[in-house]
Amino acid sequence: MKKALLYRELPNGIIECLACARRCKIPKGKYGFCGVRWNLNGELYLVVYGKLSAIAIDPIEKKPLYHFNPGSMVLSLSTYGCSWACEFCQNFDISQRRLLEGFDVSPEMLVEFAESYGAQGLTYTYNEPSIFVEYAYDAGVLARKRGLFNTFVTNGYFTDEMIDLLSKFLDAATVDFKGNAEPKFLRKYCKVPDPEPIFNSLVEMKRKGIFIEVTNLVVPRVGDNLEYARKLCRWIVDNLGPETPIHFLRFHPDYNLDYLPWTPIEVLERHVEIARKEGLMYVYIGNVPGHPYEHTYCPKCGKIVIKRMGFDILEVNLKDNNECKFCGFKINIGGKVWNLWKVSSRFVYIPIQAFTKYVKVDIEKYLKSS
Ligand code: SF4
Image: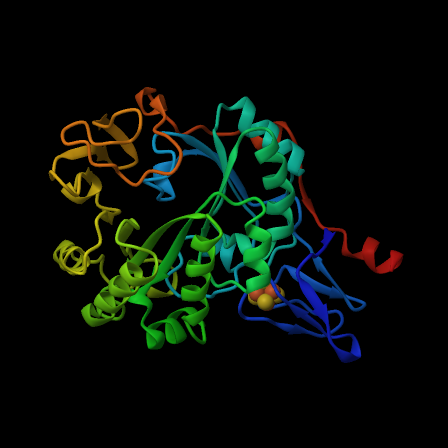
């Protein structure tokens, strides 16, 4: 547990949390919507600081980040809770639980894990990382000092104060839209009042030099409106640039929307057509291993410059300066291509129980000391 960085005091001991655009007004003794930020006597605390729900080494393609240090390995980690409440969340067991416990891991240990397992960076993922930004910040600053990069997989539902903090340690982010950012869909299925803060976050993150990839979960029947897909793609082209990678992700039945089918592949392909027509240069289909839209195609000559299967890279046709080997076109790549894609597996299980314990946060201790 640690005092939060992002909040302001209001009259009567109420705290306004500034970590996400929900801006919860939290009375004394209560938690915000995400369930992990607590008003203790007029000060805000991150209760899950250093308490992990999951940790693993993943290929960076799993995030998905296809254009930022492709072929590298990242230490992925999560706590509990979320600032959204998606009815279809595939990680609902950690995002919608409100547990004040986890594996006890300091920022220093995270960086040491990453180094000892040969990872090139840290990814704050599985649950929404902005809600535990103070922990990510401490780990991220240390990681950068040791030559590691930091990435978020996030809903992008930020405040300006959050983006200022992120700019001090974050290198790249996958910003996840759902249901083509249709406001009615987000209100009904994610309990998000308005998608506008996400657009603001994207512009500001890009302005501050954070590498951006966009994903969009296409939910069949209820979140697959093609006009909203067109609107989203047009906005990306106009505001982030046509070189911004976009991934259309296949929905699979989960949590409270387990009665819906998987997204038909033709529906995903129609989204790809629209994105390409609107001018986006790097368009992908996710969660369909073996689909031709897993590869990166050179926007100029149309040849495959990075060939993939699932999270694996099979072939790279780029020169050292990230130009297409066939025609010399400069491909939008942040960082460099790592040759780790040639190793047999970039998934590594970390036996966390051997290093630390799963513990509950001792709230009584803080109540007594305050
Ligand atoms: S981070 Fe949590 S407490 Fe803070 S505004 Fe968002 S939902 Fe509310």
